[in-house]
Length: 338
Image (tube, rainbow, N blue to C red; front, side):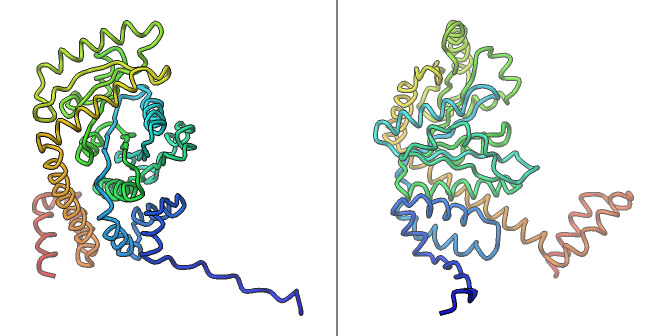
């Protein structure tokens, strides 16, 4: 036998819907990662396959507690999430952390820093840490994050933590896909509110002032009182639930058990009042509306007539021979009649 004969390399097996579904349900981490990559893909050839996989996984979703976490720069969000995630894993929970950045318009990709900073949690066999790329659009990240959440739930993760990386639109986006929304602050109320919209306090179910350790502990307790005074005058983010400020130290692992107690009390309250289920239903309808808007926009801009006429209208706007409103109206007429 001639060993010098060049062998033809084997083609990689094309995965089918069942391969992805079974891999996720068995919590095969490699297949879990590949399934998430599939549903995140913007490629048209992957879209239908990804949706078929999601449809098969749907009966296995919805059983987790979904927590959204945001915070000002420097608040130690990642350290806090790692501390909370480790605390939950040690108590038998399975935790998935999704880092979301709708504001990233430059790289169009994932921000991997948080995965690097959560090194210990990443190594935990009961945890799964995954950055979510923005794809350059807010609607895109909302779809990808929600579907990634469903995949993780189907894989058996019973606590999903969605972290906002950017500050701005990301807070309301994440609020619309979670059950409980937590805001992480640090001492110096006036200073940190400058870096974040004050409206974020109106959508918070709890505020935790981090880094309440050492010489900073007294300042943190003072900040807690200040926030509680502010919250007293704000309408509740969730009906019948009083949002309160608390202190914690991710570094010293203090206040983490209190944080989980607050989450559990909130979940019990909202389920008892049926708010939990109503909110999840509203979130599905909001997701439907966002998806429709996103797909309609894509369909509009991909239309050959629009591609052809848009540069002309842009030139007319620049020359001052037409208004933006008239140009938009004409573009819509072109789209409707073509």
